[in-house]
Image (cartoon, rainbow, N blue to C red):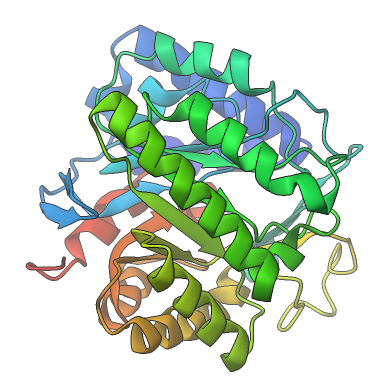
Length: 344
């Protein structure tokens, strides 16, 4: 039923501006959830329990950050059968993001390009939205810095967000890999990364003592990193006792889409064209970290076979975004069924 409904709806949604279609789809999902229809319409997702980062996941298929930036649709999205939901990116202060248009479809390639720029309602309103959600599953909260915060003060923004989300989050993702905030990706490297992760690790220990609960910290990295950069990231993750790594965010590369409409738009490329690039990054981190830290595979998952590839390359969990836009909610069940029993 869900597959049929999505097949009917997709041409209508794809006739709209992508950002308008995005908002409309989430609004319709909220309405269906309020009418108690969404769970009945959604495909049945197999239960494939996974334990990672000290958390219990009913299945290893999550929603990637960016689809529900303001934590406004948690209950509806959870009804689709995800094993976990990640919301955000949230910054300390509200910001509008980059001017529209800032989201582009490349349907011939099964891809999107976005340059949203961390548009969000700010920490206080975001957390009010989280508090209104009834769902009590595994909730990841993705944090970032405001666009106008100087690089030397970036850690202050991340620590402020960590303090603000700590009580509500099952885990917290540190986003230093979006290509759409100027200078952000410089935080992935060398002393800047070491200093940031160190500040967050110290803040986490204070918060754990205060709250009686140690919330896992996860680092989200780009797919456009070379071997020495990945080696440095693995060393920093290990040194500061981070609990997971998401590989990967969107890409600045344009391999495979060069001749398509919108390919020259600035922003991060996601979907099928970055699958191999993201999976290589995942595999490299799996080799660097040797199973010490759970990995979350993201980037280009358009089928159960793509999810299986991530698991084979070392992912304990996977996340969807662009594949969900093109395939609909049946992709969630397909990817859960691709998980090998005993992933950890």
